[in-house]
Length: 87
Image (cartoon, rainbow, N blue to C red; front, top):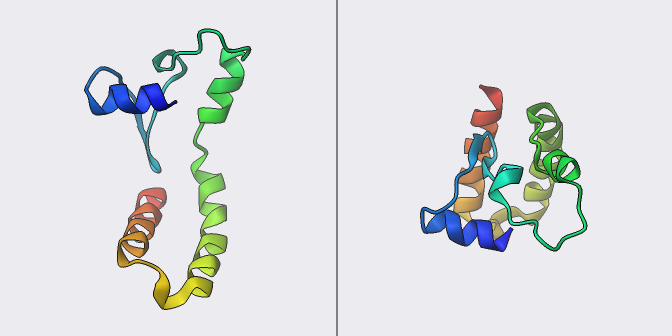
């Protein structure tokens, strides 16, 4: 995963856009030497917007617990995430 992140930053790797951001496709990852099934990796990388929408209230509850210590940028990103998941 780290190699994909670096390659993505340097423009050498692709990704697919999702409501939570860009994620790699299985073929974008270097799985050489790993004992993993590419189908399992694909399942792990799948983004289920409905599942994320169900998580939103719990995230919001945590943010309320953190209160004023929560950085504004985190709150802004969360609001943007909610908008993307509503689309």
